Amino acid sequence: MIKHIRDIPTETVTAGEKAYKQVLIGQDQAPHFALRRFVIKAGGQIPVHTNTVEHEQFVLAGRAEIGIGDNACKVEKHNVVFIPARVPHWYKVLGEEDFEFLCVVPNQTDNMVLLERK
Image (cartoon, rainbow, N blue to C red; front, side, top):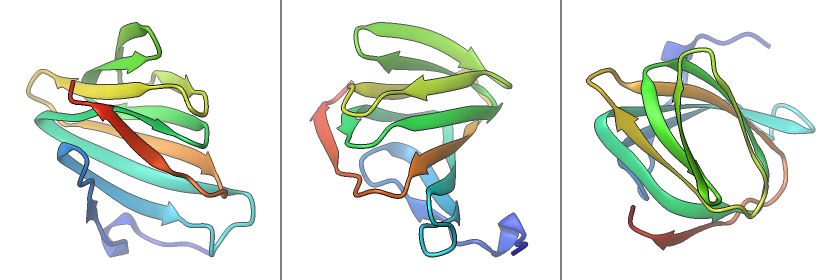
């Protein structure tokens, strides 16, 4: 299977501000993992929440502050991020460039729970 990113629908991340997602490879196409692309526009954010699955992420562009558990750190292009299942996390874009990353998750039920506004 080969696709072009321009042919994949973009969804709004309703829990965030100025945040969008594309499911590049979904669980209907691959047996074990899904590959998603997120773009959070300059000035955007995704508030603190948990997911029932782990996240492996690769930053493609931009800069952001990410909170994972009790730690906050700044990330940028080419950083790799691991977020364990059920650990609170959040994203806030830094600067004027959109923050873009790939996110791989296991093909399991993923319940997202908003905890509070960041």
